[in-house]
Length: 167
Image 1 (cartoon, rainbow, N blue to C red):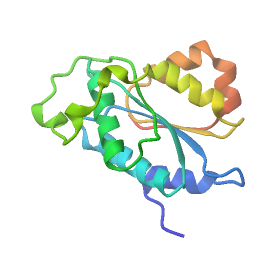
Image 2: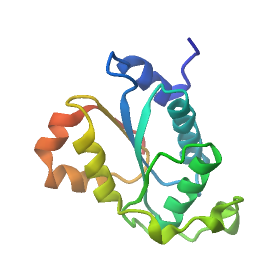
Image 3: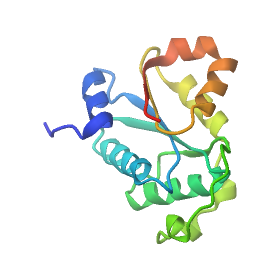
C-alpha cells in the first residue's frame, strides 16, 4: 500500500470500504494560490489510483469562477481525469488575475461556456452517492456548499460522511 498524500489521501484511507473508493467532492478556487492547484493534482492522482472517486470539482471565486473552472478542467485533462466533471461555482469577491495564473498549455482549448453549473453538479453528486459515504473538501469559499445546505438540508445529512474545511 502506498503512503497517503496529505489530507485527501488521509481521508481516503480512513473511509475506504467494501463499496469501493469513497466519493469525494472538491470545492476549490484554483489560480492565484498554488495550494488549490496542488490539492486538485493530489485529488486527480488519488482518483486515478482508485483511492477516491472524485465525483465533482466545483471552482469558484475571484469574480471569475468560469475561468477557474476552465483551469481546473485543463489540469484534470492533463492528468488523464477527463471523467471528472468540473462545475462553475459562485463568483465570490473580485480579484485581478495575473496573466501567468491561466498560462497553461491547453487552457485556451477548454470550452468554458460548456462547463456545467456548480450547484447543479454538486446536487447531482450528492444524489448519486450512497448514504453516509460522501467526503466533501472545501478549500475556498463556503458559499457553494452553504447554498446546497440551505436548500437541501436533509439530502446533505443523508449523504455526507465527512466535511473538511480549509479556508
